[in-house]
Image (tube, rainbow, N blue to C red; front, top):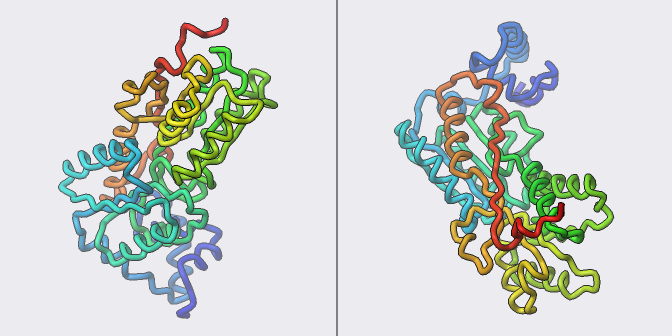
Length: 341
């Protein structure tokens, strides 16, 4: 019966692979009835669980891995600070891996970590990741795994995010109330969870204020010159925007540079707002209005949840899907004194 896998057992019982894995580990989260069903089928099929997960439980490395897509974004630096604080309190070391937004790099890192060198994993997925089989394998093995910020919403694993859709709605609404009607949203390309949530908030605000026909969505990438060209084209077209809302802080910096090049005045000719955790945002000329994400709190909360999983403690319902609110800071790039009542 060497072809019997944990996934096939899950399909036979109409359970998720993670439920089967937790049943075999006698998890407190699984009912005794479910455990009995799983064990009965396992015995019938003579299934031998992968020894990798049990070796992790018995021989803790006192190390966790944190996988992030890039380090240039100040958001991830603050998340790491929060993770490090909780890890130190638990007597753990933190290994940091950077995927550079590359799916294959993400797969390779996770494959390497399957050697059992870490007791748990925290990950924010790369922008190019659309297939999650490499992550599903970890959940099936029962290895503690927590998503943060960029998450896989179809997987049965804890995740910690911020209220991206609500924050994007409030930012777009603010721009509308300052008199803007042609608001361009600069989104990160791909199928990232954060991109879809932020885009939905932007569109909902336009819809509520009767401006949905005016939507301008520009899919940008991490290549600075390619993004620069798209922003430049946006300003050179006949029906140019009167406001720019950027999904990540990197695009706001490029927008400022293009405005300077084209001699477009902020906020007189175009207003600006961005998701940004840059401490230097207040030093921009003019200072940048920004949605400040609770990056440090996301790091702490994600690490707290991971260590509960490592210690085999039952998660509270509120710890399985955690959403921490962001807050909007209005500065000179979209001043409140221009609000239209």
